[in-house]
Length: 175
Image (cartoon, rainbow, N blue to C red):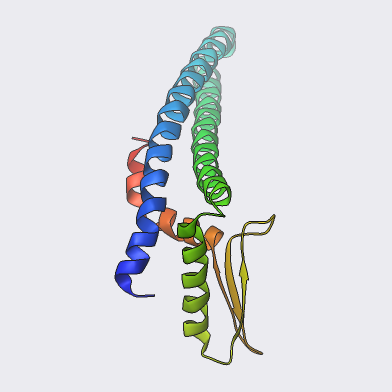
């Protein structure tokens, strides 16, 4: 598989990935901001209550308690944002794989599976045994094996590679 064929094969996945990631990121970002704001507001109210009670015991104790409560709230809010980002990433990845599976009978996907088999064999040599897997419940792609090596050229691997190559663009969706 030459560079242009790989680029063409990945272009469809990259476009779908980008569009789905954009949509998922917008939704996840809005949900995460709302959740984070609510958590911070709740934490601030709790921190203020702690501070008011602590004033009676001394200013030093109150300041420390409020700082700890706010740090915990920020940590919880950050975990909520990271969780939303992970769910968005997983949703996009699953959508792309589901779309490939839905198109498994298409000429383009069958050609892609053939090219993946060729690429896997090229990595390990002509002695490699290659199994191609259409999307009949199994992962789309090909696996090549020799006695000492194994190459998986599957849709999962392609999607993961495409998402890794698009890491900076995906990261920008969260800012």
